[in-house]
Length: 208
Image 1 (cartoon, rainbow, N blue to C red):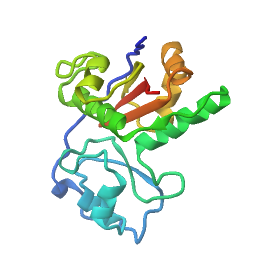
Image 2: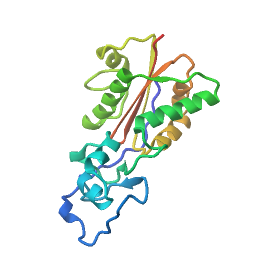
Image 3: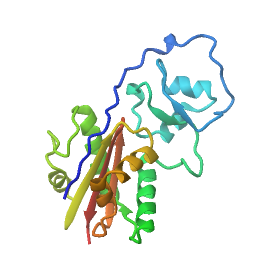
Image 4: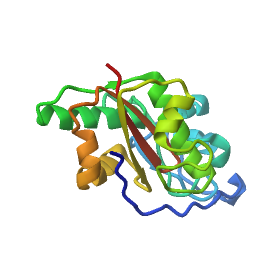
């Protein structure tokens, strides 16, 4: 059974050109911290220059961010570490499996094709400006999985919008009975997680 929760929606503001930055901004030889919140006028090129990074590497560390459409308030990674070298999607999967282990359940497999569908659903929610399990473009999650050629015995979906980190979205889901039930459903063996501009999607299936 599909569960849902309405969460706060971020109000996005498009960035101004780099020229809007003050001329006396401090520059660093390397990032003093791992995360950075996007401000007005920021671009990957400017942020990379300020923190002594290669802008292509900065984009690699943040595959979920569209370089030409950065939003004020978005949190990006400035450097990789043992904790933050993976994408937000992979971090959510890790947190899901931590919760399942605590409940005595088997971990879920993060399958690439299911992850692709979840990412497309997250992107669709932003680009088509809706928050619902039923997409105006793809239909229900069940329809969407079948459209992308994924077979399953049973399936479910969690969605959220507005949380800035994997920890924040997992906290929201685990404090909601319906979402928690999906995360701790012993029938599921596979998960796909998608993140796009503040929209989060978990798709669960029983494949075996």
